[in-house]
Length: 39
Image (cartoon, rainbow, N blue to C red):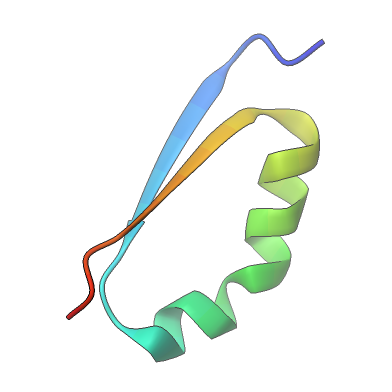
């Protein structure tokens, strides 16, 4: 059961790529929302 929510904010593409494995794990275990600012 995914009871906790986590929101991550990233601004630049290299950060998004570098963090992709962490985002996958967050998606599996939490209600994860990713916000990309498009900088």
